[in-house]
Image 1 (cartoon, helix red, strand yellow):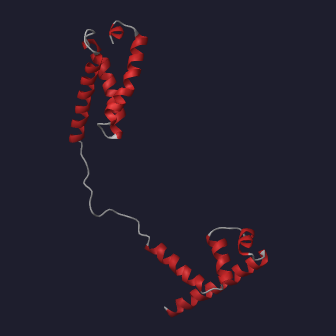
Image 2: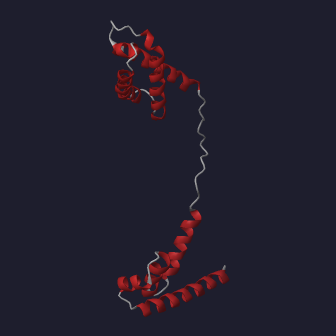
Image 3: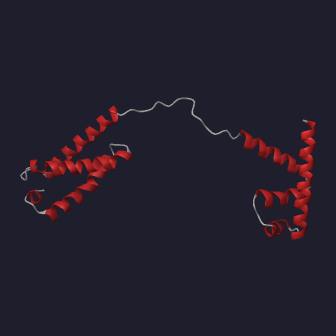
Length: 167
């Protein structure tokens, strides 16, 4: 710091670069993460503005620590005066009831199909597999996969119509 006070810009830049990590560690232990970088910058600015007050005959670290401490206290005061919002007990969350009910209803309908039909409908229509991939997984030929999908969807349609008539 003494060299920096005498006008050596390169030494001053090196000094600021060396105290930056120390300041970061200092504030990380004392402030919320969102405030650390601002506190470090405020302290570096204060060091720059108050560099003329440093006495070269005295140790540098306590001088720097005092500036950091004051900047930390400033941040604490700012936190105290900043408004916070009180959380209510009525926090809105999305309702998944319709999706769960629909999924359960679909599973009940698929349970009424032949297993081969239900399997290929799940694979192709619900999971998005290709006819060829469904054929490989089920052991059915590609033609049979297509037939089972067509017949299964027709059966599902008639089941839905029957239930709609009853209700």
